[in-house]
Image (cartoon, rainbow, N blue to C red):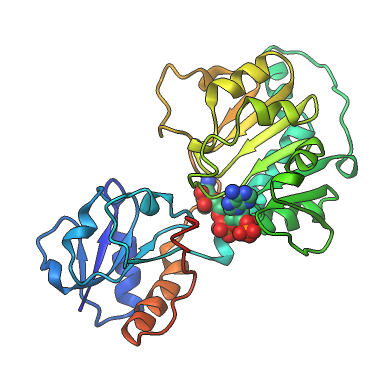
Length: 309
Ligand code: NDP
């Protein structure tokens, strides 16, 4: 029984070390080094080459190296019987919470505008709204969204959450389902996208959605680039409806040198760093699932393949 690590373009060394520290007897292969495919029952993966998992006749589980699983679910050739797991990790949640809080505060206190003014040597105070007057809407209030909501609540913001099913979180007004979507959007001065990428959510950040947000709303996308229709965002910022955006994720990463986001004065670009998985923090749950798979027990953090997250 062997374990396969597949992460093209990403150095697997820290993962392999953490796996071996946690489980010294584990036989770990790193794709594409030479290995016996029949031996592999468990794979740890990030952006695997499409279709490869069909060649592993005894593979039972593909574990994502991160909280997102769209890089696995989007592989149409992934055999139906293979289980998918995601990462749920305190550190990941904390980092996402503080990152989004930083973006919200930077917007709220006009820090990007002041940077521009500094470059132009302009001493020009700008008025600001106090936190308790600002409504932040979290689109997709799951594990990471809840952590974001806690950070925002601690700092006095009003928080709303949108999800598939109604939630009962302290001090967060919950909206769910299509009927409540417009109300949720109309009450979001700042919209934070935390949805998983699925067939239902691809291109959800589009012109129609932006027009339902209040005038001068601000958009933060820390989920996936494919949620956003980039031209619609640019048009709605440039026509003055939106006040700007902070984007951490993109259709193509890195974005091309000539991409209009780079130099847009109202768009903040960060290179997919909102919350980065730390192998040593996450490997214990991967090993636990490996043991559970061997014992034929239910896996933790299992993805429902029919809903895609
Ligand atoms: P979860 O699965 O815990 O939460 C997803 C939330 O979205 C749930 O509340 C779910 O509702 C809701 N949801 C799903 N589909 C819909 C829909 N069609 N309409 C309305 N609500 C929907 O995910 P996580 O919080 O763990 O992760 C969210 C995403 O964050 C990841 O998928 C990944 O893309 C991204 N991410 C980005 C990182 C970065 O560095 N930029 C780092 C890590 C993750 P319900 O609860 O009712 O099912």
